[in-house]
Structures are given as C-alpha cells and as structure tokens.
Image (cartoon, rainbow, N blue to C red; front, side):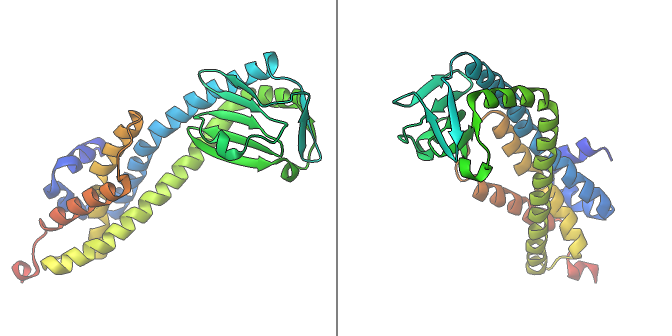
Length: 256
C-alpha cells in the first residue's frame, strides 16, 4: 500500500489503523521515518531561509557599518563608549564593550548576533545561545569575524545539510520513543477492553495513531501558529485515536 494512502486513512479511520497491525513491522517502522520527515520539513525550510538571510545581512553589516573591535584574553574592547545596535529586517547586530548588555537583554530579539563584553551570543528564532570568549581560547578582531562569515557563506549548503540530518535524527528518535510509550499504553487498553493483540500489534497501531497529531502540528509549524498546551494536546489526540483503534480489535471472548 502506498505510504500516502496509509497516511490519509490514518487521519480519519480507526478501522484501517487497527487493520494495519497485520502489516510487517518493517512497514510501521518505515512509516514512522516517513512521519518524522514530514514533521522535519517545515522547520528545516524555515531554518534554511532564516539562516541564509541572517548570514547575508550579518556579512553586510560587518562590512559596512560595524565599528572596529577586538577580543583579547577573553575581553572585548572598542572605542565606543556605549552599546551599538545595527538593525536589519532579518537580523540585529549588537556590539557592547561597556558591559551594559547581558544575554538576557539579547534574548528579546528574534534573530541577533551580539558581541558582548565577555560573551558572544547568537539568537535564532528567539532561542539564544551564549559562548564566553575565554572558552574559545583565541583572540580575534572584527576583520576576522568578517572573514569567518564570508567562509560560512560558501559552506552554507554543507552546514544546512548537516543541520537537517541532525534535526531529522532527533525527530526520528523522539517519534520512536513516542510510539514505544504509546504501545505500552496500548497494552493497558487491550487488557481493559479485553481485546486480542500482541505488543508488536500495539506498536504498529501506535505508529499510525500519531498521524493526526503529527500532521496537525506540522501544519501549525508551517504557518508559524503557536498552539497552547501543545504537548498535552499531542498526547491526548494520539492516545484517543489509539484507544478507539484498539476498540476495533476482536475481543478475547469472541475469539474463543
């Protein structure tokens, strides 16, 4: 059966989900990989577009507008007596040799590159990461940063590809753990409802039961819509579909 057809049937039909338990376990495993790919795509596309724009704008600002600075022995110095903020639609660059700004101040930006007194901070889509200069164990100037961004631009396809692989790996890992936990919950439902089925059957049913929640949250991610209580809603929908699918299984008494 075509993967897309199974996906569509899993969106609305507990009967089909229950029947999928007869498929080889390899089909259920490949289906989880397929769902993981679908869930990864919106994030990967948004990341690719954002990082392209961000690096391009950063490179331009470093070239044209950022004042000279240097980092020596883990401390940033420049001739500026107050923090500098350079803003573009895609990124904001901050330079502060006074020690006024902190990583908490930088975190309020959506996309930003910040050269602080003792730290380098990077904000991508509202998530901030800071790196103390002393950990880098290297002195550098604004010209070195400019050369680095130029090199990074040329390596961008490789960086994006590696990032996608890492993201896909973690998505697959979380999905498989998710399905495994659901399968144990399915065993509880099976016993409560007095239905037939092995753990392998529960695992296969669980793999297809996460379809609706996965597709829904993938669409929300693509539209950049924040769903309140997303984790709880995800589990509630998947467990509900798992329950009604297990109800479609033959009961132990009927089998006797």
